[in-house]
Length: 84
Image: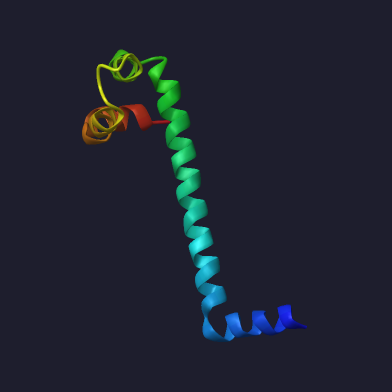
């Protein structure tokens, strides 16, 4: 009974709808992040520029934040890497 009462309060206040909306938004971003990571991982096997960035991070020659900025800021390369 208390659970149902709590649910009615959440519904009446609009909080239940807001929580569901946030959950859907977070699910979207999780899916996007997963697919982007999968594509970039695949492209790193094929593209020497991307592979070199990853190798430099692994060797400690380049920090991950700088490498991420290079990946995301190079619009031409990013389009190529993310293309299906």
